[in-house]
Amino acid sequence: MDQAKSGRFIAEKRKEKGMTQKELANHLGIGDKAISKWECGRGMPDNSIMVPLCDLLGINVNELLMGETLSVTDYNESSEDIILTLIEEKESLKRKNKKNLVSCVMAILFAAVLFVLMTMPIQIQHNWVYFFDPLTFIMNPILVLVMLLTTGNVKPFFQSFFIIGKKNVDRNRLFSSQQAVKLAIASFLLGGGMITVFDTIFILGTMESEPGKRLAVALLTMLYSMLFALLLLPLKYRLEAKMEELHEKSDPS
Image 1 (spheres, rainbow, N blue to C red):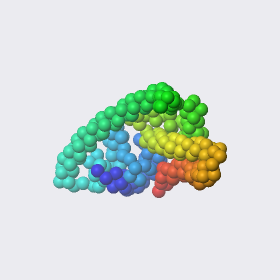
Image 2 (image 1 turned 45 degrees about the horizontal axis):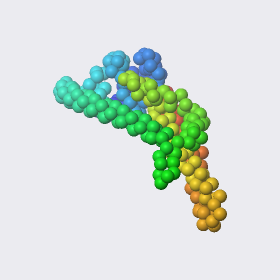
Image 3 (image 1 turned 90 degrees about the horizontal axis):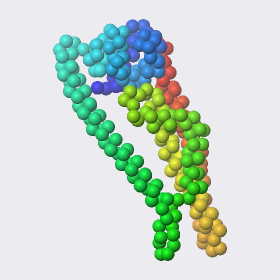
């Protein structure tokens, strides 16, 4: 099944019926942004909407999935192909969901074990080494929270933890949550790296040796680069959000 082809077919049949995206959406009881996404090939109608949509467009479900008008012969052949494809996709989705669940559980267990180890000091050559510092531990999450606030992604970020457990999720919410999580990951990495470089510069800069001070100055380039990258992250995600809004705009024709 080709989503782009099905999307063009939906747009073609909608225009033949003389309906705008908004009018079609009103008949289906959904938002016109969903129609726009279908026609742009960035999604397909849910199972509950397919039959009403086909009735409105004067087509059948097979034609919708194939993205073209079918003859009787083509209809029978496509039915078999679609059934086999749906079975394969269902089995593939089951395997993928199972792998994702196992990966999530393993990641959570690993993070929990790592956190416990971080809070326990380790003795190395008669010296105790601590892997947990409260100030350092809280600085990075605060920085990430600021980035999420700046880009308006706080709510989508926290919604992502609830979305992963749901079967039917609104595509707009899913996209927003994905963007928010990407932003959080990038902020964690850049923020952590920037704090590490800053601390290293501070340590080297306070040394009495000349090579240490020169190395501290040399590291400033990396610190500035990471800082500018961090400052540009909100702009990047704002622009992506704007681009998504443009894609979702209804076609008045």
